[in-house]
Image (cartoon, rainbow, N blue to C red; front, side):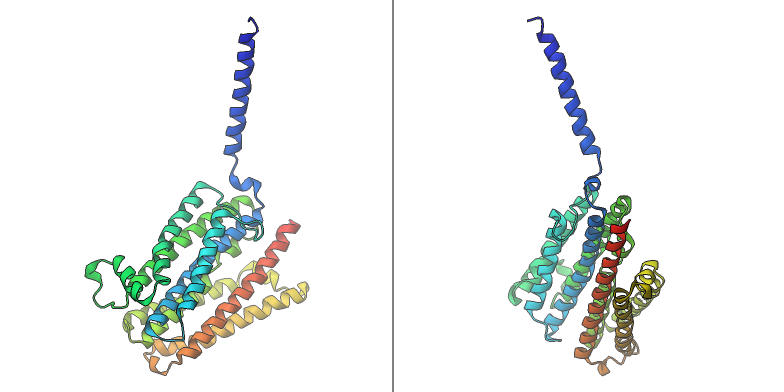
Length: 318
């Protein structure tokens, strides 16, 4: 019986040791056990949400106005891609090298973005009858006049989700920098050019349809200036210069071709933008404009993929 106190002491010591060990484990930042590259990929995917939500916003406008041959199937495809991105960010994926939320701040912001997506998703996938019913449920009664198709309400909610997705991306970027990934700077631009291109097309459609023309022209001027300013910034990017270095051979040629194609497609789309700003939208060819915009986004995605591959090589050789 005399040995019992000693056993209690040893038991307490063991319990205390286990408690300290658990405390240390939970104190370690969650990204410490994750490849830094996966944090960068998660940041990139969070950034892509911005372009996809603005694409859905544009598709909703075209669908409601019966323009551009856009159908429910197009909105369903974009909605499915947003669903996939949110799911993969929530759970992480070893197959796609996407990290789980690295800290509580990211997790909570991701939950907030998902909550904003829920009503937008319901409207985007609704039948024509349910579309108006669901949209009306989400709008103040005194705000329905002048917006019979609820496109302004959808736009407002889309912009709110884009703003919060940008905040989510910045939280990922902070973790990305702490983890030491080479993808952080590049991932910060993910989805941004696509978002601007989709927004430009949306504003062109509004002007073409004669909806909020003067306001849309002012917004289009802002989008044009933002796009060109972002292009100028990207042109000075060290990672673009390094990836396009002829010494890298064929891989660099792909980067140079994508960069050239992106700038040329923007110049073609800008012609349509300038027409609308000069209040000559009646001369616009909607089908041609939408084709140019889709091709521009395609070139952006091609360039993004090439630069991501280059960043992955840098990460492996670090």
